[in-house]
Length: 104
Image (cartoon, rainbow, N blue to C red):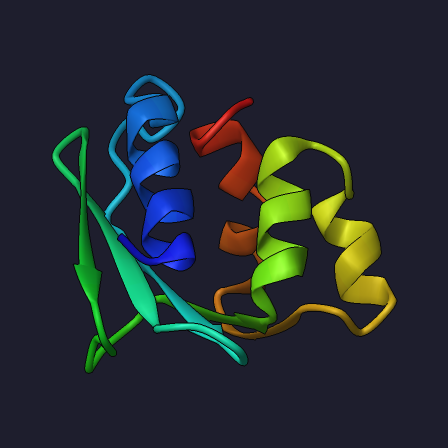
């Protein structure tokens, strides 16, 4: 299993359906040094797929180390964004909810 897939598998386990209530969204992750994945949230469930979604709600671009640090709580996502370590396209407010939907 790839290191990036392991990160997304861990995110699926931590998915909080209550936080994602009524949300319909696709989070696209463009990883500079690993495979791209996207997470689709719909009807209180989350699915993962490798590759690029053709109509993502928000696209987050970063390297794998940054993703791991944000999802582990070592790095605040907003701080990483302000430092230029994460670039976001699309619904940026949705991106700010990532660590609520996938808590540590």
